Length: 447
Image 1 (cartoon, rainbow, N blue to C red):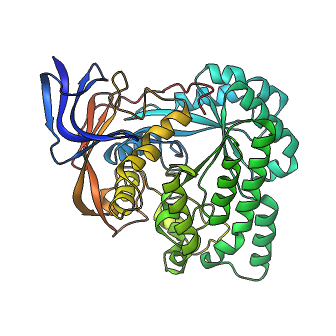
Image 2 (image 1 turned 90 degrees about the vertical axis):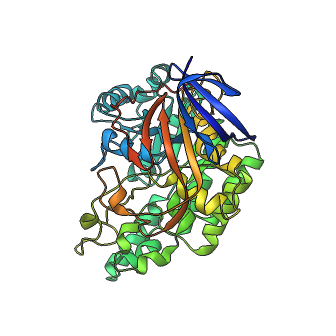
């Protein structure tokens, strides 16, 4: 007797779709196809059945958003695994940073893992990489836009190489510090301080130069890199060229760069759309969609990092001091379905690829996460492809108090989210399930 059977939905993977049942037992997928009797059943006829979404890029545990609060929004939106960041501390230890992050994640509703942010690539930190991977933390994060990176470039290249040897994937925020610093100083000196000048302070050139540098390092060291939140045509063209040469490089974009242009900064509340890099031109948006469809871009991650609305639109702030980051865990899946699948930009199979299967594989979480194969964790989303709702900030279930896509009409919403066999959200509401999120170890050498 199964614990749960999901009956008659269209089950979608990155390679196929078919009307089938999904059976769940003991928190795992037991069977897909014609499955036997179950203690509980879900009628999914006319619905789409997907693996739970894996978001490779969140800032849960930072700012106003805890792991507990952010995973509530994740669950309502069909996200069943989140990757957040463990910050290297003053002690310099990467392993200690990861252990602190795991310890601070009590109350998570869905499963989680981490990238470890490296700001000091010391010899001691590099020596920890094999132990870090063995402990299930097979991923790093580096900010090329930091002044530390510019000052210690050779040390960071050594980090990339050592990470590659240890089987770790390095996520990279690619913007050039020198260009950003020079442009920002010039604009502020000229009194051009408003949010409308934000794109000028972090131009496409700053992203493109840093992306190309990161790709050169990946090619030279043979280490895999994961370029986060790519925003421009120049960036994705550089990635496409490198991948054609066989460079082990993977690209991510985020919702802001799929749905908005820099015109949003002209709004009275334009500061709510500030993220790094800035919003770009319409031609860049088109290029991002093309790269997502043709496989140049591997994933879509939210970079979920909300702030209070009042703190974002504070008139005393300049474009350089506005807090970057937005909330979009809840709308990641429905908006990509509505704007991607419904508008013919992506197939359902490609949506599953970029939100579920490829993120899980790159994170070293497959086959446990990202698929509905027998034996995988029973992380399942039932999506109504015809359900139309208006995005409302009032519907947020996290600590965020505003949604950047407030007022958008979106078609295709999760009506059931299951995390390891437990129904955690139904019809846009939390079910009251006890927090059951666990740390999921990342396997080394997956990318």
